[in-house]
Image (tube, rainbow, N blue to C red; front, side):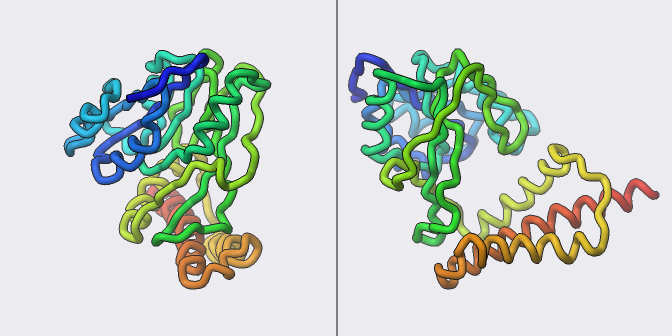
Amino acid sequence: MARKHSTPISIVINTYNAAKLLSRTLDSVADFDEVVVCDMESTDDTTEIAQAYGCRIVTFAKRNYNICEPARDFAIHSASSEWVLVVDADEVVTPELRDFLYDYVEHPTHDALYVHRKNMFLGEWIKSSYPDSQLRFLRQSKATWPPTIHSVPTIDGTVGQMPKDVKFALVHAGVSVGGQIRKMDVYTENDLVKKGKKKVSLPELILLPAFRFFRYYILKGAILQGRRGYIKACFSSHMKFYYLAKVYERQQQGKE
């Protein structure tokens, strides 16, 4: 049963076929005043799980969307509280983060806060990706969320940052190797639209993925995390390569 606070906070979770991970997330937000699950017409048990936890469920038509951002704005404005924490279905809110936010809303100094993320991969925290700041805590009346992939909400006001202490971070469960590969295809397809790059050269195809690997593995310290760090660095490099390869594919199609 959610507790009642003098200044309420709503949790907003966007879902599509999130049944495998959702229970862990909902357990972590049980003490918030309201949990809104905005579902994009899941075909698994997502909504049944949300109902069992007493969440308020709203539906956003999936259509041909393969990302959640088109539903973000609708979701945050479906909450009954002014203050909203946006949580993904594979994330966990720590008690320290919850307590910090409830203390904060009693005397807020900004209209939104960047919340840091502790990204897990193959069961281990990937420190090289920290703090991975996400603009997730906001006054809904001050926020508008663009529908493009990995977009950041527009805030009509001031924006601050959470403390960088990892105890205040959202814990991101991450995905399996297979899930990461599937995400790369989705993300690169959407980047084609978002970035609008029209041409790619051979030096770009060779050097940009290589530099991405060097930056993640050496400069960001993934080398210190053994095989997991190496695999993550390879994924980062491959993501860049797949995107550029798709740009080249479109470039060639335009010549036909």
